[in-house]
Length: 322
Image (cartoon, rainbow, N blue to C red):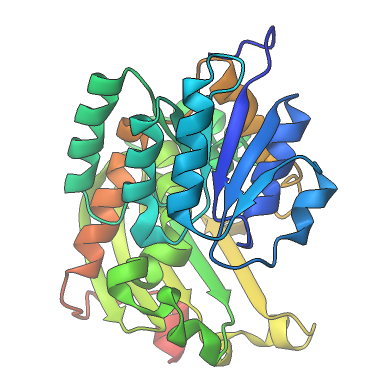
């Protein structure tokens, strides 16, 4: 494993995606080499911003063959890490590919859609001797780390009241893509909520009970009780849900987390968080299968729960307005 005394070789799956450039930058920023990339779309000119020597493939079969050829050429050429930026439903298969070719997997969230895939990947980890890592960049955000340190010192009997609101407008294309297919994306909670849920459980503890108050293809809302917090949450990809404070400012996204009625501000500090996660992974740390299990289990349960109205104090203010 890279401990900054050697250069590691990377391959990347999903090079044309929105998040891929952050991975390319992290690979370069940590002093490593991106040797190969694949995507069925060839709109990947961004690669030139990081290297002119990346072998690019439109077909996964040819990419697979190339990676295998590099593996047979020995330590200096073989792929050490595969960065996975593909659609959610392909993560499991692409992680398996990485382990099969003798590489560690660094996968965007969510690691998988269904909890049972975690057990299978754990077995493959043990068989291959390679690791599966997930990008949980909120856990390395300075403001969020500071909040966790503060909460860790509070009494276990103290219950915080949290409102999580995340609205990110999406047009018709969204619902005609894999993102709008719950079988491929995991639904709204998995697509746009899983990293917030992971963050809250990491800070405030395990889920003790949960409720779903609204569940559609465009929005979800509910409540869960954590060891140190009661959380009302509202997630939406519908632009009509945007509050006045966002629309009047011409914004298409609204994100808010309040703790005991006070806004928790973490809008800044997102620069290079992927690079921070990569550095941790290359130093032998990073977030693995067991780190992500609680959030994957939670979102799976929410997705498969019937929506019922809970008690008034559990209902998110946005849902009350609707």
